[in-house]
Length: 277
Image (cartoon, rainbow, N blue to C red; front, side, top):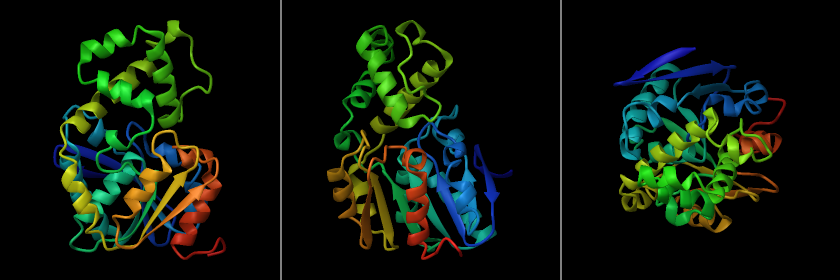
């Protein structure tokens, strides 16, 4: 595993396979292991670069979305210096980091964008998950969120949100008595940090930044995504200069887990590759 140091926050990344470089950005609170169902097949034809964004999004130093994007600019230039121009693939929050990086890519290091259930600018206003909205609202005041966690509704909300964004979450809701397990505490930290990031960002200018992106963009949306709607994906697509929207039937928010085969096929198609290449 190689390392690139981004100012005060080190980001580790793996390189697997050989061929044109493709960078995969995982979602908020995830890790590069979220791509485990994608990498073995995809790396047969491309060089897969897997950064771990955890130190950037959930590290000890709080960083706004804009600050994270600025630091990822260092990562982008380092990857270009090592591997040349690359295709950027992201899911959820990682997809938002991807489109933001591309909007600040005056050097044209990024060739294409492949965005899976991407988080749009003004995320809360474009969410359809009331469970996530409630938790993010409560998280603005830590004591309020702590009190809310004592209610059965919070137990339901946590399970709904975690099952959407965490691959290690059980399919069946855990008993209420187990709400303060290690995983629940981690999710509490995740929700609290995500709420802080959303609150401390001026999202309005980002819609204009999205409109500056000139590279081809493919947005993929899972029809069973409970966080962002098809309407939101169409709205985001309309802001790109050169884009297409593809829908995966029965695809969840973590479509790289629920619909890995379809995602691989769409990435290959977007890269103008065949399975035999």
